Length: 68
Image 1 (cartoon, one colour):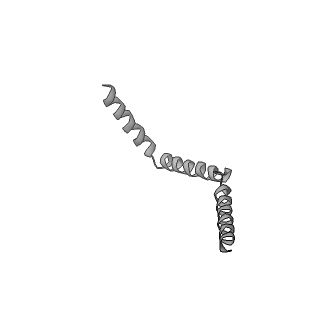
Image 2: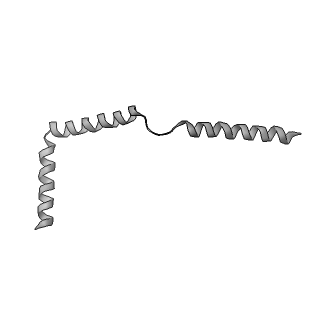
Image 3: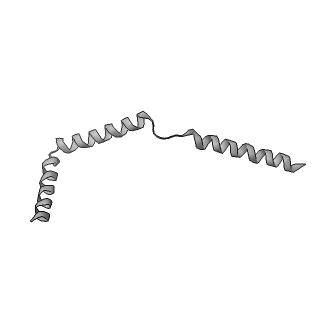
């Protein structure tokens, strides 16, 4: 008589795990918005500190070495 109780417990556990697994269906709008805000802050920091010119000069120099 223990087998039906054990089987019932196993099935209920699998159902709960399935519900938990199916609960997350990907990113929400707020997660994407957070990523966009962080990227904008990083770009703003690069431009604000003057690193943009250094990066552009390094890329230009690297491209010049490749093409010549």
